[in-house]
Length: 211
Image (cartoon, rainbow, N blue to C red; front, side):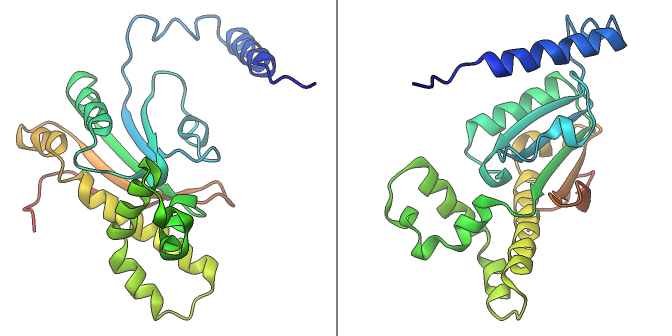
């Protein structure tokens, strides 16, 4: 009988830590007593999109929040508490909201009317329903498109980044920072799983009137 253990992960952790210390004996001491990340990363929980790895960041450089389809929901206390702590206690100067091509959450929202999730009463079903509502304009545009399914999904991923970005720049912690004159730039990006490249789609660094 095979029993799943933590041993492979622990072994890789020990190897990683040893390599870091061999290259720099003080590697783990820099942020031992405090953290001073320069950026907050809001991304998708997809295991293929690890924020620190794809940005080449070291411990202490990124404050990270991840959820399905990199969503920004105004009444999500988890996200709001992360934003508040990152902006006002850690003093990050940059927020990166990143989606990624091939996003399963966006695909689920696209398929929702025929998906088993449509009949569920679960946290996942509610979140995907919210996502589909956020994407209704993008879905309407795609219905008349002659693009293949992969290109349509990629366009919808970009539409999701724009939609979530619009929510992000309107939430209280971000607007409060801008109103107080705090330096804060917000970026909307998309990550390409095939090339490994991150592409900027939109940015904002000051408060703009709400529509």
